Length: 302
Ligand SMILES: [Zn+2]
Image 1 (cartoon, rainbow, N blue to C red):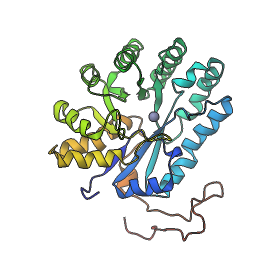
Image 2 (cartoon, rainbow, N blue to C red):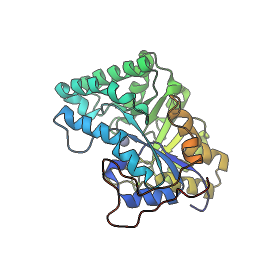
Image 3 (cartoon, protein in one colour):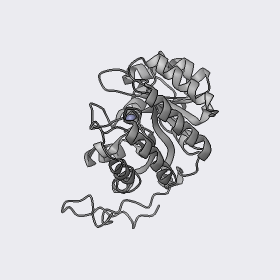
């Protein structure tokens, strides 16, 4: 965008998005993204489906992003909805440590509650223990129904398990939940949904009222109605509405970087000194091109 800001979208499901989205995001200033593992709409029936999905988040998708000049990281976890299939959930949890050690994995996520069932509670707690053991950041999905109670419960359970709230990102906040989250020392992320729920006009007012400390903007764009440009658009709107550039940088870039770089895998140098796009590269013999001339920037001086 014309504002020349670097943007991080720390919650976007790129596996569901197109190469046009990657191009538009890169042009809008998005330098890095985090793709949380989550539900695919169609419930999975076998552990192998999870394994292949996790593999794509640490393999194919970072490659695809790199072909459009964006650095891709991910979070790995068992989502709340599929925690309700306990026989499968048990196998998925066993699989997690294999992936949590991969080089682009920056947190355990997105985990938490959907319907707040006993099974969701059990696997949320199990994964919090894993986070503690591995000293990893946690990205929490808060329920869309019964939001306030679900958000408070999520935080209480994290504290009960001895997690440092500064290492926990509570996502999908709104005006009703933000104060509690910040007061308890957690990081408050906001998903900007087009048309409904949390729109970006409302986000501007949240930052005006609560400031920019520990507040993060994301798109959660996925296979549903959503906008992969939600973060750059919100950054632009904030500037237009008189929010200071410093606050915009914190909420749309720096706070996400600080929150997700704690295990040392997410580094500014990955995009400040880029190698350039090289679309002649292949991943398992496949490219993202369909007969086009590859864009190759490798000759450029960085
Ligand atoms: Zn999500």
